Structures are given as structure tokens and as C-alpha cells.
Length: 299
Image 1 (cartoon, rainbow, N blue to C red):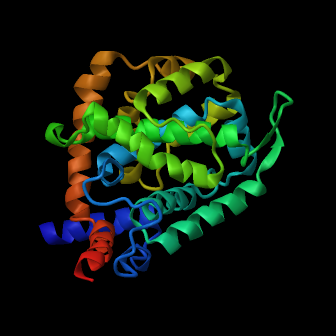
Image 2 (tube, helix red, strand yellow):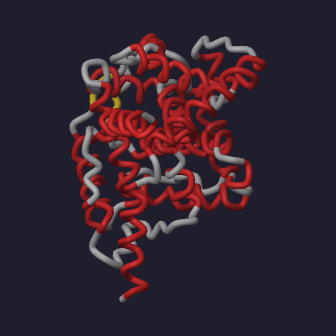
């Protein structure tokens, strides 16, 4: 019975996160290839991006935080198909993160080139009259920083305490993820926790919730194609609220008391995350990447 349950959880999660196919060839070869950014097991970037609960909650938090930039949100609202195909959008994001972290050099370059091509087609005028384009270096830096700040917050909250990063390792994480953003065209990318905090503080006057942002957050919190999916998404998005800066929760009109966030949301998300991790079992993607990296030592 447990084996059958585990297989069902694994199949459903693989379909939702990866579109049903892990495409392990992106990670398994060629033997000895270090990956485009040289990330290895034990590195902060590998540890953060390999922790399921931290990435799920951090990912939801990132979407909410990113929505507070009116130009970034205008691009999503006017060009993204997240309403019609939210799972497809999720698959693309997961594919980019896993490939740039664990994939071969060729695979990482392919997904980066794909995203760069997509960005050239995303441009327009925001409701406030300002022009925007997705390949704007400053806008790319915002999207990246909001994302990795949220991933790190998710890891530091939901990884077992002995596995959480030290302050020095948190700075290393920012340094390791910065080249990914720069490969997409970002500039002046934060490389330490302090840099990230200063960046957010500097942009704070520009950040506020537009009607499109409030609509997207409501859509996110209600997402789910089945009752079970809506339940899990609701638990994880509630938990992600606790990862946001207090001012971001205020901007989004989210009022969730501290006691609820720490005494209810966090324990539930921890339990759900452990169940999902049990269902997934050891990461096939990380195992394939480790096998590829081991080829250098064997050679």
C-alpha cells in the first residue's frame, strides 16, 4: 500500500513540476562536464536548490514579491500564459533552475539562450504609461534578487537546522547564483546577503501592489486542478507568506498574524514537505548530475 502511495505521489509531482519527464539526459552527461557554473554537491547553490520544501515555499514567495514591481508585473500580466497554463509556466521555471544548477554546460546554455530569446519578445507599456522590456538589465536584476532571496529564506526556514547555511555560506550562495542572472543580461547583481538587503531597500520606493499584482496573488493562492492540489498549494502558499518581508505582506494586503505563521503555517508546511519528499524519494536529477561529475574523477 505504501509503495503504491509513494509511486502516485512521485508521478503526480513529476507531472506538476517537470511535465511528466525529468529528461535526465540534461544532467547525466557528458562524463566529467562540470556544468556551466561549476556547481558541485555540498555547494550552497546545490543545497538550496536541491531542498524541495524550501524551493516550493520560496518559489511561491518569489512570485508574490516579484509582483510588487509594476513593470515586472505588467510584463507578466500582458505576456504570460500563467492563467491559461499555470502548470506549463511552472514547468518552464523548474526546468530553468534545475538545468542551470545541476545540468551539463550545453544544457544550461540551451535554457539560458531560450529564456533570452523569449525576453526579446516581451515588451510593452505598463498601465502607468511607462515602457518596459523583459531584457532590461535592471528589471532582470530585480526578478533574480527577489527570486533567490526567497529561495534562500525558504531553505533557511524549512531545511533541518544542521543543514542550514551559515552567514558565510549565504554569501557564497549569492555569489554562486549571480552568474546565472548575468548570463541572462542582469547587471550589478547582489553578491552577498547585505548587498541583497541594500538592493531591496533601494528599490522599496518603487514597489507597490497594482491591481494585476493583487489578482495574480489571489490566483496563486487558489491554484489547483484537483481538491488535493488546491489543499497542498494552499498550505504551501500560506507558509510562503511568512518568508516575505513585512512591508511586502502589507503592500499585498495580506494580514496573517505572527502566531498563525509560526505556530500553524510553518509546522503544516514542514509536515507536507516531508510527505512530498518521501513520495519523491532520492532526487534522480541530483543523482544523474553526481554521476556526470564523478566522471571527471574517474577519468
